[in-house]
Image (cartoon, rainbow, N blue to C red; front, side, top):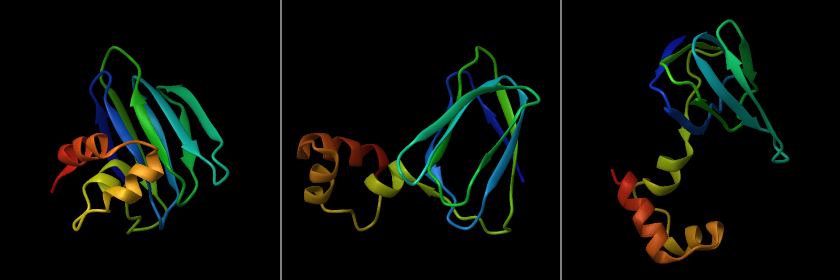
Length: 123
């Protein structure tokens, strides 16, 4: 279980848990919670104190405090070792790095943009 606190505007970036389903309840504040299915359909909703969410194992998901005050969640997993793959740091902060050619083609951008992103996540 985790106690997760977000400042106003705070984000838990897109990530997945390869070995666990996540369930959470909003204790304080308003949180925009979303997850993507394997066919890239986004399911999302603003949840308020007392409301819950469930993210199936392995799906990419995120949380964002959309309120003007601190938000707090309690989350739990159905595994003692859920794992976490945080997409921004996984893609742009790996060691050794993913070749720029792969990332420029994947994101349809250029080396300058990829290098700028990599500089933000460098290990």
